[in-house]
Image 1 (tube, rainbow, N blue to C red):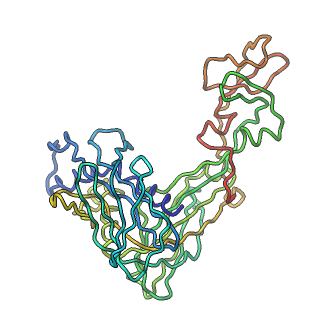
Image 2 (spheres, rainbow, N blue to C red):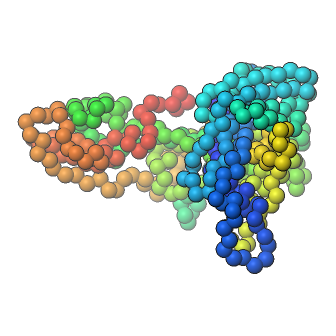
Image 3 (spheres, rainbow, N blue to C red):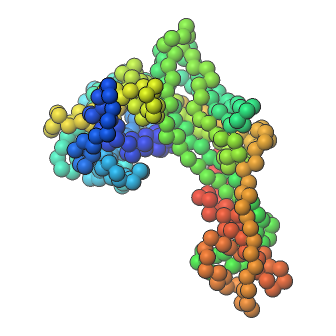
Length: 394
């Protein structure tokens, strides 16, 4: 779970890394005019290394390798780097190889690292290029004290905040990820369901409705870079740091919402790296926003020292905390679908074969021998991307 959250939290690197490089290489202060540099027409094909070495006892670590994409490629396009050799090395000389899982993903066996050592990642790609990170110390994250939420009186949106502190005063620089899960249901209660072929329907009772088409769960992972530091305070404490905002009437709190927040501690150098990346990607947009800054991670290409490498290695324990928000805890929250029309079809004498050609519509109920349809998104919760399998923590 730890590695999964981190890997998804970093997925944004895949989409805008090339754009960021163009900004950094071609930005000039002063007068601005339209200019299309030659690099826009090429693919730098730079290696992107995503992952954090999990310092928890008996935990696995996952790294994902990919390549930067061309400007103009569809957002979210992903070019994995397969067939690489990836390993973690300790300063005492031990080596832990990672096993390829497909789609550029590499995972370790369960590790129990020595917190007195430093660790680095070594990579050899299939074309023989060698990459290596700096040796990084293991940080220890303090527990998350609490997660809380507040609903804004005017906008109605909900803001989720995190609280933590380090009694030893040794942390100071924090980064967070989260995964979220929510329960929702359909706008209409269908009396009919389609089989897996989509051509045969059958009647369902009220109990079956709940398990087949009515209640679903969906999930997502954070993508923004979430940082906090306590260096300007008299104690090592983070209080009410906002990490997520849920718009009013979002489906996420239609019934019940859960967040699993993950926290780890950064070195100052790592914090500075992610802060620059945060400013250069999340805050750009006007003349008054922070302007692009030089970005340099702690990975190097050994076979070609002039080749930039995208990524920053951190090593540390990860603390997690889960909390829930129920619909009864918020006000004026109505995320139900409002556009759920019905239509009548002439189904004919065969009452189990569904023949309506428009797949956006589905069988709702029979009125005598007449089949009534409605939009499938109103009848089957799975159409909205969810699953009827209840999470184990629910």
